[in-house]
Image 1: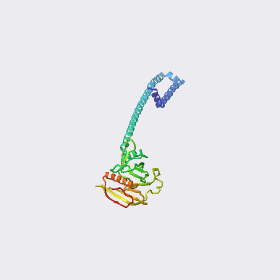
Image 2 (image 1 turned 30 degrees about the horizontal axis):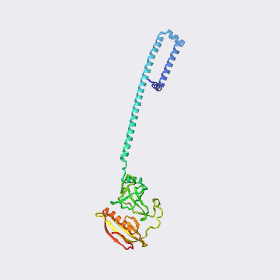
Image 3 (image 1 turned 90 degrees about the vertical axis):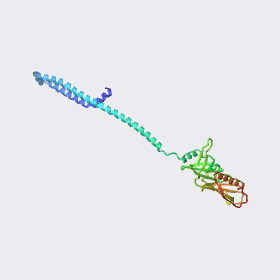
Image 4 (image 1 turned 120 degrees about the vertical axis):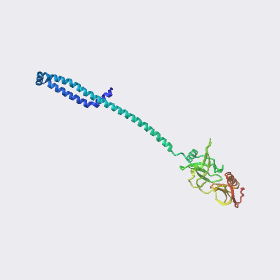
Length: 311
């Protein structure tokens, strides 16, 4: 038995052992008083059988007390073994609880992974565009290529995954902004430089921003309009066989009669140039529309002091 077990036994049986020692001490004291009292001693001297009885009683008491002490020790040992078994069982249960907690954590992680909402195409495209904020890019629209004559700036991507494409003022057109939902874009990332974008569908109307050249200036006053629109000098309408989708182009003269024309698309894009430049822009748009499968279905001319080279 170890020192720890001995200490544990004494703590568990201290009260009973002390009681037993006290009883034995009282019995021994009573015997001493009886044996050494003068009258009692004389009585015992004249009656030898009392001496034999006392001697026999002392001989019987020792094994009886030893028996009870051994029995008590055996019960204590049984209780200690039971306590040890219970502690071992508690340790096994605690180990099992730890295993179950670890399994629970694994299952919860798997459930979180399985129930996680998949990333949508709009979110993927928005994440790509946010990496290129502030850079210019090449834009195509619909099935055509190069329909935008300018390289707009990827200006902003909102929390709703709507991208703002900003074109600053140029010598031929006012500043403008076109919006598109990110799910309505096709994005091709290039090894070097910003990605190429294909706008499948615009979101809202074109926002004209006057003569600003920086996206940060979009909230200030737009100032005086760059072009004072006059009469229609030429217009055309385009349609695609088997589709209700249409395109349109219109050329307006300058109200002051100068050699300055405004080309306006059905999507709201505006460009300003002289008669030669505006004719080139018009034919460039028409080539792009035809590449998309559109054909000119109607057209008309108006009066102008400067000839337009549109066929």
